[in-house]
Amino acid sequence: MTPRPWTPGEGGDADKRHAPATLRNRDAIAAVLAGWLPPTGTVLEVASGSGEHAVHFAAAFPRLRWQPSDPDAAALASIAAWSAEAALANIAPPLRLDAAAADWLLDRAGAILCINMVHISPWAATVGLFMRGAKLLKKGAPLILYGPYFRKDYPTAPSNVAFDESLRARDAEWGVRWLEDVTEVAEAKGFELAQVREMPANNLMLLYRLR
Image (tube, rainbow, N blue to C red; front, side, top):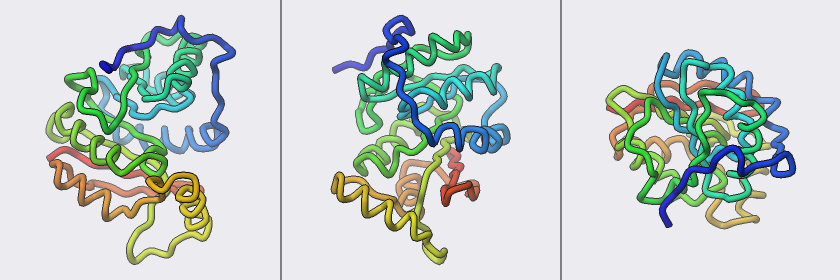
């Protein structure tokens, strides 16, 4: 099926989802994005979920055009509902987009942001993120990840171990990933890891740039 954009009118108040973690992490994420995002252009947010991050960041960065996306119909309706309420000129209708799919319905972006997807999706979604990202971005452009990761030679938080176990119990294809495995895929697709930023609640922000 070819992805399609949703219009804000397709989402009403009853469609709104709320992700409690968004209120806790959005300002910390925005503070890092301020130094990592380009000053203008389109930011493709992959796996936008409820849409709360999208409207918050669109408001925080008015010179950037925010393009939310998600593969889930209920998420798309929620994104549309939050977007309609925010009524921001720089937030585009959400796209139905599966990170593992071959067709993303876009031919370019100035940056890609992906929050809390890598651990709650099959590994093919992470591979697709970098594969398709390499085709959309220009040299030096950022692909930014946020979420929990294991790292070699770093102590692992017990909460992340427990989280990993709960994810794998829900779906054998999910789980907290190793930073080194993600970076190996990124490098194979033409990216390099430029920065790793420690974040609250044992999360990381990862800045990859296309070589």
